[in-house]
Length: 265
Image (cartoon, rainbow, N blue to C red; front, top):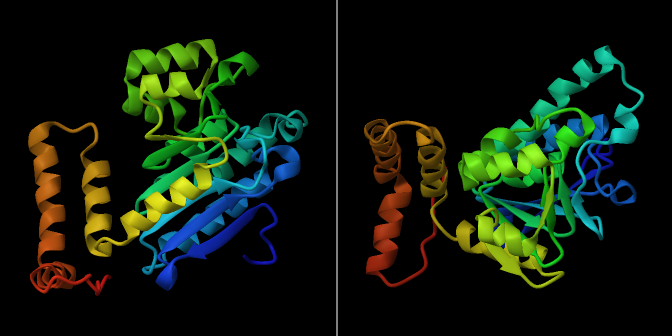
């Protein structure tokens, strides 16, 4: 972590440091997303995205009672229109930085994940929630709308009508309802979200780094397209993987009954 980063911590896990954990670490404010914190998150995600050794990322929280409670409304209360518009690019870079990470990402959620906090979790590929998780997009209750991808990402995860219910009412859902709606991917006991997310990320990171990146690219690029276009995207990603050194090593390791030593990027 650089000396300039006060609200984001970065940790490496496992042999080779192939799993990177990005920790939201502004516990005194329940990880409320200030302009400075958004700027730091954008900087960190740019650095992680450029690191070819990274195979999986966990987005977690250093706050005891929250993953992230969303925008820092105390800061924003002092904004005029000009300040609000000036903040917007920093928010877009932060949310986009998480969304555009080229490797699989896992959100480890406990406590409150509201507004922009929920959107950060939705920006990840997979979401692990513990029993204390409370999720919601309350933006319309304070005169705005979800602007960190929430209207798009939640609808893609659970369907437009279910997303509309949550977005139009601004209501919160507990972990049981979130599981029923299909918001989360893994439900774990209280306090186990981070460990479970890191374990899941380590399982993912044991696989081909070339394969992981191309599989994610195929999944993301084909969203919203017709089947024929999606299959073309998949074919392009398959070719980029099948003729890589990772494929040769994977087949050899299988034949020799050993763990692969991936050449990677």
